[in-house]
Length: 345
Image (cartoon, rainbow, N blue to C red; front, side, top):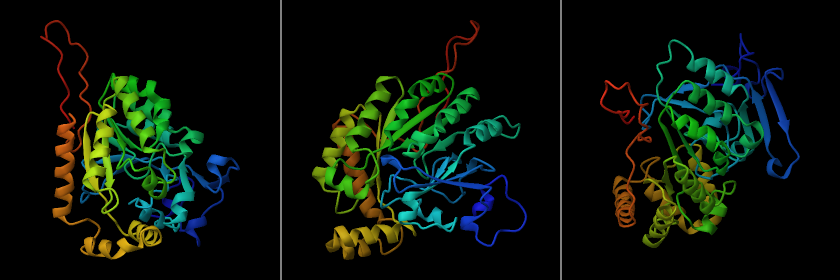
Protein backbone atom coordinates (compact mmCIF):
# COMPACT_ATOMS: atom_id res chain seq x y z
CA UNK A 1 0.00 0.00 0.00
CA UNK A 2 1.17 3.50 -0.84
CA UNK A 3 -0.40 6.93 -0.60
CA UNK A 4 -2.12 6.66 -3.98
CA UNK A 5 -4.12 3.67 -2.71
CA UNK A 6 -5.55 5.76 0.13
CA UNK A 7 -6.83 8.68 -1.90
CA UNK A 8 -9.83 9.32 -4.09
CA UNK A 9 -8.08 11.74 -6.41
CA UNK A 10 -5.21 9.51 -7.47
CA UNK A 11 -5.17 7.15 -10.39
CA UNK A 12 -3.02 5.82 -13.19
CA UNK A 13 0.67 5.14 -12.74
CA UNK A 14 2.28 5.43 -9.30
CA UNK A 15 4.15 8.69 -8.72
CA UNK A 16 7.91 8.83 -8.53
CA UNK A 17 7.81 9.59 -4.80
CA UNK A 18 4.78 7.92 -3.20
CA UNK A 19 5.56 9.19 0.30
CA UNK A 20 5.17 12.82 -0.80
CA UNK A 21 2.67 12.05 -3.52
CA UNK A 22 0.28 14.53 -5.01
CA UNK A 23 0.04 17.92 -3.34
CA UNK A 24 -3.54 18.14 -4.63
CA UNK A 25 -4.42 14.80 -3.02
CA UNK A 26 -2.58 15.15 0.30
CA UNK A 27 -2.98 18.40 2.21
CA UNK A 28 -0.20 18.76 4.80
CA UNK A 29 -0.76 20.98 7.85
CA UNK A 30 1.07 21.93 11.01
CA UNK A 31 -0.47 23.78 13.95
CA UNK A 32 1.59 25.96 16.27
CA UNK A 33 -0.33 25.16 19.42
CA UNK A 34 1.09 23.40 22.48
CA UNK A 35 -0.92 20.21 22.04
CA UNK A 36 0.10 19.82 18.37
CA UNK A 37 3.60 21.28 18.38
CA UNK A 38 5.97 19.06 16.40
CA UNK A 39 3.12 17.12 14.76
CA UNK A 40 2.40 17.17 11.02
CA UNK A 41 -1.03 16.19 9.71
CA UNK A 42 -1.48 14.74 6.23
CA UNK A 43 -5.13 15.20 5.28
CA UNK A 44 -6.42 12.80 2.65
CA UNK A 45 -9.78 11.84 1.19
CA UNK A 46 -9.81 8.07 1.50
CA UNK A 47 -11.20 5.70 -1.11
CA UNK A 48 -12.61 3.30 1.52
CA UNK A 49 -12.90 3.27 5.29
CA UNK A 50 -14.22 -0.20 6.22
CA UNK A 51 -11.30 -2.63 6.17
CA UNK A 52 -11.39 -6.43 6.32
CA UNK A 53 -9.05 -8.00 8.86
CA UNK A 54 -6.69 -10.55 7.26
CA UNK A 55 -7.85 -14.13 7.73
CA UNK A 56 -4.66 -15.12 9.55
CA UNK A 57 -5.15 -12.42 12.19
CA UNK A 58 -5.66 -13.35 15.85
CA UNK A 59 -8.29 -10.64 16.18
CA UNK A 60 -11.84 -11.72 17.15
CA UNK A 61 -13.47 -9.42 14.58
CA UNK A 62 -13.52 -9.16 10.80
CA UNK A 63 -14.05 -5.48 10.01
CA UNK A 64 -12.36 -2.31 11.25
CA UNK A 65 -12.56 1.45 10.77
CA UNK A 66 -9.41 3.53 11.29
CA UNK A 67 -9.83 7.26 10.62
CA UNK A 68 -6.16 7.94 11.46
CA UNK A 69 -2.76 6.42 10.72
CA UNK A 70 0.14 7.15 13.03
CA UNK A 71 -0.53 8.09 16.64
CA UNK A 72 0.60 10.91 18.91
CA UNK A 73 0.17 8.65 21.95
CA UNK A 74 3.77 7.66 21.07
CA UNK A 75 3.62 4.30 22.88
CA UNK A 76 7.06 2.83 22.33
CA UNK A 77 5.67 -0.71 21.95
CA UNK A 78 2.83 0.05 19.49
CA UNK A 79 2.49 -2.85 17.04
CA UNK A 80 1.01 -0.52 14.39
CA UNK A 81 4.36 1.21 13.82
CA UNK A 82 5.14 -1.10 10.90
CA UNK A 83 2.11 0.21 9.00
CA UNK A 84 3.80 3.60 8.62
CA UNK A 85 6.49 2.01 6.48
CA UNK A 86 3.78 1.09 3.94
CA UNK A 87 3.52 4.82 3.26
CA UNK A 88 7.31 5.24 3.20
CA UNK A 89 7.14 7.04 6.54
CA UNK A 90 9.42 6.50 9.52
CA UNK A 91 8.18 3.93 12.06
CA UNK A 92 9.87 5.66 15.01
CA UNK A 93 9.43 9.39 15.59
CA UNK A 94 7.60 9.62 12.27
CA UNK A 95 4.86 7.32 13.54
CA UNK A 96 4.44 9.58 16.58
CA UNK A 97 4.44 12.88 14.68
CA UNK A 98 3.33 12.25 11.05
CA UNK A 99 -0.41 11.64 11.36
CA UNK A 100 -2.53 10.69 8.35
CA UNK A 101 -6.10 11.97 8.71
CA UNK A 102 -8.90 10.50 6.58
CA UNK A 103 -10.96 13.67 6.60
CA UNK A 104 -13.91 12.15 4.72
CA UNK A 105 -14.21 9.12 7.05
CA UNK A 106 -17.74 9.88 8.42
CA UNK A 107 -19.37 10.52 5.04
CA UNK A 108 -17.56 7.57 3.48
CA UNK A 109 -18.64 5.23 6.28
CA UNK A 110 -22.27 6.35 6.01
CA UNK A 111 -22.21 5.60 2.29
CA UNK A 112 -20.64 2.17 2.81
CA UNK A 113 -23.08 1.23 5.58
CA UNK A 114 -25.94 2.09 3.23
CA UNK A 115 -24.63 -0.16 0.47
CA UNK A 116 -26.74 -3.21 -0.42
CA UNK A 117 -23.62 -5.33 -0.14
CA UNK A 118 -23.04 -4.44 3.50
CA UNK A 119 -24.56 -7.02 5.85
CA UNK A 120 -24.36 -5.08 9.11
CA UNK A 121 -21.35 -6.91 10.56
CA UNK A 122 -19.62 -5.79 13.74
CA UNK A 123 -17.06 -2.99 13.21
CA UNK A 124 -14.11 -2.57 15.57
CA UNK A 125 -12.34 0.76 16.08
CA UNK A 126 -9.12 1.66 17.86
CA UNK A 127 -7.56 -1.65 16.87
CA UNK A 128 -4.69 -0.18 14.86
CA UNK A 129 -4.15 3.32 16.23
CA UNK A 130 -6.30 5.20 18.73
CA UNK A 131 -9.31 6.93 17.18
CA UNK A 132 -9.36 9.23 20.24
CA UNK A 133 -5.78 10.41 20.01
CA UNK A 134 -5.09 14.16 20.19
CA UNK A 135 -5.83 14.72 16.49
CA UNK A 136 -9.47 13.82 17.14
CA UNK A 137 -9.82 16.93 19.29
CA UNK A 138 -9.27 19.04 16.19
CA UNK A 139 -10.72 16.95 13.36
CA UNK A 140 -13.74 15.57 15.26
CA UNK A 141 -14.29 12.57 12.99
CA UNK A 142 -15.70 10.20 15.61
CA UNK A 143 -19.06 11.96 16.21
CA UNK A 144 -19.92 11.53 12.53
CA UNK A 145 -18.69 7.93 12.56
CA UNK A 146 -20.72 6.99 15.64
CA UNK A 147 -23.78 8.77 14.27
CA UNK A 148 -23.55 6.78 11.04
CA UNK A 149 -23.28 3.52 12.98
CA UNK A 150 -26.21 4.57 15.18
CA UNK A 151 -28.39 5.51 12.25
CA UNK A 152 -27.78 2.12 10.61
CA UNK A 153 -28.05 0.25 13.95
CA UNK A 154 -24.68 -1.29 13.14
CA UNK A 155 -22.90 -3.03 16.05
CA UNK A 156 -19.45 -1.70 16.91
CA UNK A 157 -16.74 -1.61 19.54
CA UNK A 158 -14.09 0.92 20.50
CA UNK A 159 -10.73 0.39 22.20
CA UNK A 160 -9.03 3.54 23.44
CA UNK A 161 -6.52 5.12 25.78
CA UNK A 162 -8.09 8.53 25.18
CA UNK A 163 -10.32 10.46 27.59
CA UNK A 164 -11.86 12.34 24.66
CA UNK A 165 -14.36 9.50 24.22
CA UNK A 166 -16.42 11.12 27.00
CA UNK A 167 -17.16 14.01 24.63
CA UNK A 168 -19.26 11.53 22.64
CA UNK A 169 -21.08 10.01 25.60
CA UNK A 170 -24.54 11.08 24.42
CA UNK A 171 -23.94 9.59 20.96
CA UNK A 172 -22.72 6.34 22.51
CA UNK A 173 -25.86 6.14 24.64
CA UNK A 174 -28.04 6.73 21.60
CA UNK A 175 -26.19 4.00 19.67
CA UNK A 176 -26.44 1.56 22.59
CA UNK A 177 -30.21 2.00 22.54
CA UNK A 178 -30.43 0.51 19.03
CA UNK A 179 -27.46 -1.82 18.64
CA UNK A 180 -24.63 -3.59 20.46
CA UNK A 181 -21.87 -1.28 21.63
CA UNK A 182 -18.70 -2.55 23.29
CA UNK A 183 -16.20 -0.17 24.88
CA UNK A 184 -12.81 -1.11 26.31
CA UNK A 185 -10.16 1.16 27.76
CA UNK A 186 -6.51 0.09 27.65
CA UNK A 187 -4.69 0.28 31.00
CA UNK A 188 -1.72 -2.06 31.23
CA UNK A 189 -0.29 -0.78 34.50
CA UNK A 190 -0.66 2.02 37.03
CA UNK A 191 3.04 2.76 37.61
CA UNK A 192 3.34 6.51 37.05
CA UNK A 193 7.05 6.55 36.25
CA UNK A 194 6.73 3.74 33.70
CA UNK A 195 3.74 5.45 32.08
CA UNK A 196 5.65 8.70 31.57
CA UNK A 197 8.43 6.97 29.63
CA UNK A 198 6.64 4.20 27.75
CA UNK A 199 3.33 5.96 26.88
CA UNK A 200 4.35 9.65 26.92
CA UNK A 201 1.50 10.99 24.79
CA UNK A 202 -1.38 9.27 26.60
CA UNK A 203 -3.59 10.41 29.47
CA UNK A 204 -2.43 9.06 32.83
CA UNK A 205 -3.74 5.60 33.82
CA UNK A 206 -5.91 7.04 36.58
CA UNK A 207 -7.57 9.39 34.09
CA UNK A 208 -8.32 6.46 31.81
CA UNK A 209 -9.87 4.61 34.73
CA UNK A 210 -12.02 7.69 35.36
CA UNK A 211 -13.33 7.14 31.82
CA UNK A 212 -14.22 3.55 32.69
CA UNK A 213 -16.06 4.74 35.79
CA UNK A 214 -17.98 7.46 33.94
CA UNK A 215 -19.04 5.19 31.09
CA UNK A 216 -20.33 2.52 33.44
CA UNK A 217 -22.15 5.08 35.59
CA UNK A 218 -23.94 6.20 32.43
CA UNK A 219 -25.04 2.73 31.40
CA UNK A 220 -22.30 2.07 28.84
CA UNK A 221 -20.64 -1.15 29.95
CA UNK A 222 -16.88 -0.70 29.79
CA UNK A 223 -14.15 -3.26 30.35
CA UNK A 224 -10.39 -2.89 30.60
CA UNK A 225 -7.82 -4.42 28.30
CA UNK A 226 -4.87 -4.75 30.67
CA UNK A 227 -2.32 -4.27 27.94
CA UNK A 228 0.46 -4.50 27.64
CA UNK A 229 1.86 -6.30 30.64
CA UNK A 230 5.53 -5.48 30.14
CA UNK A 231 7.96 -8.22 31.21
CA UNK A 232 10.27 -7.29 34.10
CA UNK A 233 8.78 -3.77 34.27
CA UNK A 234 5.10 -4.20 35.15
CA UNK A 235 4.72 -7.94 35.81
CA UNK A 236 5.73 -8.23 39.47
CA UNK A 237 2.88 -9.74 41.53
CA UNK A 238 2.58 -6.54 43.57
CA UNK A 239 2.30 -4.48 40.38
CA UNK A 240 -0.31 -6.80 38.90
CA UNK A 241 -2.28 -6.61 42.14
CA UNK A 242 -2.16 -2.81 42.24
CA UNK A 243 -3.34 -2.57 38.63
CA UNK A 244 -6.20 -5.06 39.01
CA UNK A 245 -7.25 -3.39 42.28
CA UNK A 246 -7.45 -0.01 40.53
CA UNK A 247 -9.35 -1.51 37.60
CA UNK A 248 -11.86 -3.09 39.98
CA UNK A 249 -12.29 0.20 41.83
CA UNK A 250 -13.21 1.88 38.53
CA UNK A 251 -16.20 -0.42 38.13
CA UNK A 252 -14.86 -2.14 35.01
CA UNK A 253 -17.12 -4.92 33.75
CA UNK A 254 -14.13 -7.11 32.88
CA UNK A 255 -10.35 -7.22 32.74
CA UNK A 256 -8.36 -9.02 30.05
CA UNK A 257 -4.56 -9.20 30.28
CA UNK A 258 -2.34 -9.13 27.22
CA UNK A 259 1.41 -9.56 27.38
CA UNK A 260 3.63 -7.26 25.34
CA UNK A 261 4.28 -8.47 21.81
CA UNK A 262 7.03 -7.04 19.63
CA UNK A 263 6.33 -7.20 15.92
CA UNK A 264 8.82 -5.91 13.34
CA UNK A 265 8.79 -2.13 13.31
CA UNK A 266 7.76 -1.95 16.95
CA UNK A 267 10.48 -4.34 18.13
CA UNK A 268 13.34 -2.16 16.92
CA UNK A 269 11.88 1.01 18.42
CA UNK A 270 11.07 -0.65 21.74
CA UNK A 271 14.50 -2.28 22.05
CA UNK A 272 16.16 1.07 21.37
CA UNK A 273 14.04 2.58 24.16
CA UNK A 274 14.88 -0.34 26.44
CA UNK A 275 18.61 0.04 25.85
CA UNK A 276 18.38 3.72 26.77
CA UNK A 277 16.15 3.41 29.86
CA UNK A 278 16.78 -0.15 31.11
CA UNK A 279 20.00 -1.47 29.51
CA UNK A 280 20.27 -4.28 32.08
CA UNK A 281 17.11 -5.84 30.61
CA UNK A 282 18.21 -6.00 26.97
CA UNK A 283 19.70 -9.51 27.17
CA UNK A 284 16.68 -10.80 29.10
CA UNK A 285 14.37 -9.52 26.38
CA UNK A 286 16.50 -11.02 23.66
CA UNK A 287 16.13 -14.39 25.35
CA UNK A 288 12.43 -14.02 26.16
CA UNK A 289 11.53 -12.97 22.60
CA UNK A 290 14.09 -15.14 20.84
CA UNK A 291 11.39 -17.13 19.04
CA UNK A 292 9.55 -14.17 17.56
CA UNK A 293 7.08 -11.41 18.32
CA UNK A 294 5.33 -13.13 21.23
CA UNK A 295 6.54 -14.05 24.69
CA UNK A 296 6.65 -17.80 25.38
CA UNK A 297 3.34 -19.53 26.07
CA UNK A 298 4.40 -20.43 29.60
CA UNK A 299 4.96 -16.76 30.40
CA UNK A 300 1.67 -15.65 28.86
CA UNK A 301 -0.22 -18.36 30.76
CA UNK A 302 1.41 -17.34 34.04
CA UNK A 303 0.40 -13.69 33.63
CA UNK A 304 -3.11 -14.61 32.52
CA UNK A 305 -3.58 -16.93 35.51
CA UNK A 306 -2.33 -14.34 37.99
CA UNK A 307 -4.55 -11.58 36.61
CA UNK A 308 -7.62 -13.80 36.47
CA UNK A 309 -7.09 -14.91 40.06
CA UNK A 310 -6.76 -11.28 41.16
CA UNK A 311 -9.81 -10.31 39.13
CA UNK A 312 -11.84 -13.01 40.85
CA UNK A 313 -10.59 -11.80 44.22
CA UNK A 314 -11.68 -8.24 43.44
CA UNK A 315 -15.00 -9.26 41.92
CA UNK A 316 -14.40 -8.82 38.19
CA UNK A 317 -13.85 -11.37 35.49
CA UNK A 318 -12.15 -11.87 32.13
CA UNK A 319 -13.92 -10.91 28.95
CA UNK A 320 -14.44 -13.40 26.16
CA UNK A 321 -13.10 -12.84 22.66
CA UNK A 322 -15.32 -10.48 20.70
CA UNK A 323 -17.65 -9.90 23.66
CA UNK A 324 -19.72 -6.70 23.41
CA UNK A 325 -22.42 -5.44 25.69
CA UNK A 326 -25.74 -7.26 25.49
CA UNK A 327 -28.43 -4.88 24.28
CA UNK A 328 -32.08 -6.04 24.48
CA UNK A 329 -34.21 -5.76 21.37
CA UNK A 330 -37.22 -3.38 21.39
CA UNK A 331 -40.39 -4.61 23.07
CA UNK A 332 -42.26 -6.85 20.56
CA UNK A 333 -45.95 -6.92 19.74
CA UNK A 334 -48.24 -8.27 22.52
CA UNK A 335 -48.49 -11.64 20.77
CA UNK A 336 -44.83 -12.26 21.57
CA UNK A 337 -44.33 -13.10 25.26
CA UNK A 338 -41.41 -10.82 26.02
CA UNK A 339 -38.18 -9.15 24.88
CA UNK A 340 -35.32 -11.14 23.48
CA UNK A 341 -31.60 -10.45 23.47
CA UNK A 342 -29.13 -10.34 20.64
CA UNK A 343 -26.53 -13.08 20.76
CA UNK A 344 -22.97 -12.11 21.59
CA UNK A 345 -20.71 -11.40 18.66
